[in-house]
Amino acid sequence: MHVGIVPPRRTACIDRESSVAQACRLMREQRLGELVVTENLDGKPVPAGVVSARDIVTRIIAVELDPATVTIGDILWICARPATPADSVPDTVERLFASGSDALAVLDFSGKVAGVVSLDDLLVALVSAGARAHPRIP
Image (cartoon, rainbow, N blue to C red; front, side, top):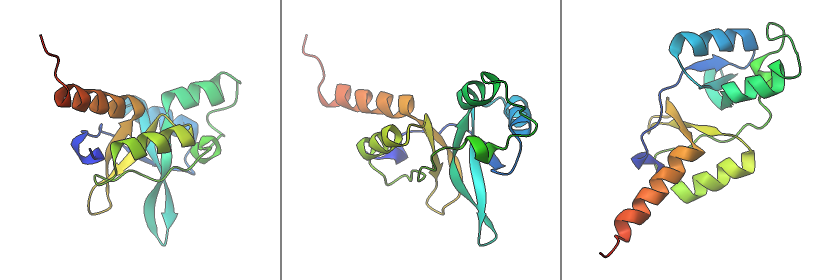
């Protein structure tokens, strides 16, 4: 089973130098729970990780830091490699656990951000595949 069968959730991208306050506004405007954080590499934005609303609440708001001065890059602790449609779901679950992140960016076959996939999304796919492979006998 590959990540390509798990529909990625819609997302938006934000540069790692943007403030947390800017990220919050973008999340509100787009009605999103996470953003793909990008950084410039050879003049092109590439995914560096994912930041979630939970990250903002636990790392900024709860410790009373100023979201206007803290950057998204400051709270992007672990830069996890994005998932691709060809990655296996079990390997992607392991990568998520190892990174301590809630979600990974998903790149399409051309290398552009297609969305995000969460641990919950991947676990649902695994359970669904297991149920189809082993139907209950009445």
